[in-house]
Length: 139
Image: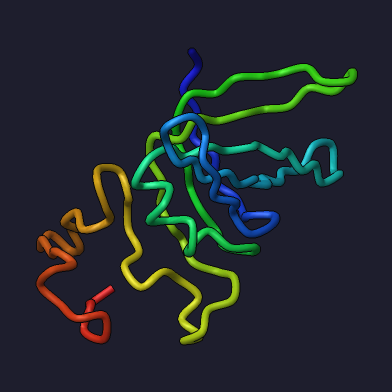
């Protein structure tokens, strides 16, 4: 399997559904680049399985900037090729509509393991989300 990292914006709100015995959060990320002076947009369909998908579904909304990584596959359907990514890691980068106007998730950062409470290093100092309330986070 090919591992890939895709940074871009969500095209619509994520969809949470049951697939077999697990929950899966599906969303599409658009990444744009310039090729010979013309802007080209590539869409990647992403699937995030399990509790991480359930927890992040409400934050993965239209317009949000994200960086996702995982296993990339290509599928052919009715003569078109579709890129699909089985997500291993998600970084919420902000953007989109938020009730508090902040443009990012309340926690931000990475949601690699079972939640997004991993520590962060800023300017050589380590911080954990548990050390601060949402109003005091220094980043």
